[in-house]
Length: 562
Image (cartoon, rainbow, N blue to C red; front, side):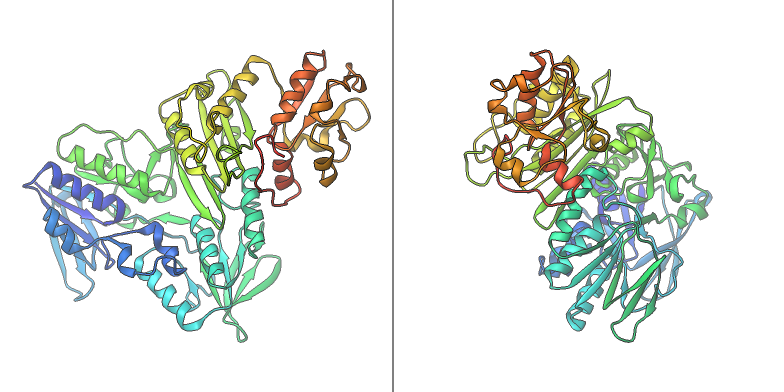
């Protein structure tokens, strides 16, 4: 069997090595148009920022190492320019010599990835305007930064690459302006959780321009380049990074007549087979099913690409293997924050017409009595009725990664949200609490579903009655209340509530808030058992302060929020 693979990196290289492990006799050829067949794509911004100092570290495997261990015929700087399915051949161009030749195949695997989206703006060809996709792009940017020592930069786009580059340029001493044409950065997050990213960016000096649209670039005599904005004054900087998204690189597939889907992506079945026999496709160029919704989706992440390469290889070698979909689990370091998500967000659940509910909690990363405990904010979305977990988002300084992975596993296993309360998770004071934040989310949902507590959310604050027809109650300490509170809320600390219950009108509904949501929950249980209809604020005042008041709210504290 002869297998030709177009493109390396995550999907192509994974397919090639898996085929070899299953078939020692197969002839396997990888054509890669760049000079690097297997590299740490996600590490590229950190080389530019000097966090990764050895450029050789970016190469996960080389043609020589892949040949030595797996006997793969790896040809870098070779571009497949045409597929002729009826003859089962590809036309290949040697980019060094210009020579073109044909290569036949029994099975063909396409792993072309996605390219940076570059709209038809004026000025994208300027030397100071960069995109980031390949190792060569990385070296080009790094060398330019070292040579020109830029003082200012504009980054167009607030996705993963844009935010990682913003952090790394700031760490190099560059003043960064980040332009995003929507009201928030990081589309996988809901707006309330993205607010923590906004606060962190501003805290580190990033000039964040939301709801601002880039229209092009022009030469600037004083600096280097002007970024032209719609209905706003141009931005002047020494350099620009264009990071507004990626587009599946599927020109080859289109010309070969393969069925295409979203944004021109390659349509595949769960065996990673395309619409033409003996041609498979994997990675960022393919359309997949979202694991949670079952809808067609584009999810450009290294984890799914690696799995898809393995699945394609299994099927090529006669092993029935299926890709069940991607739930988009992702994580990013943003200065001192870790930001992670899995599944769908609330906006997607709402647009899909799902009957859902949510909890927001603000626990600490480990036992509060052990030094260094830091706050995190966890938002979990679940389907009413079935109680299946739809998605989760977490922002914090410690312990985010372990919790998002637990929740990603729970989603994949089809667990119900209430079953999170039953998980037996590892505990020691430096690492967690006896009631882990994941368990706490389950406890909260148990209480909601049992009718023990009702909630109100940050977007309801402006609609709360201030005419005396409801009790608006802040149950934090007097000192906390004095440092900041929502207008119209009166202060009765939870520890004084039983003695002062007579101050609360039992005929009026009560809306409660505390710093993290824990003390106000306790207060709602006291009030409800005194025949008062009450609602607990989801997330606590620290959450409200960041989302509504746009203030940084992270600090060391106890689980109750003090």
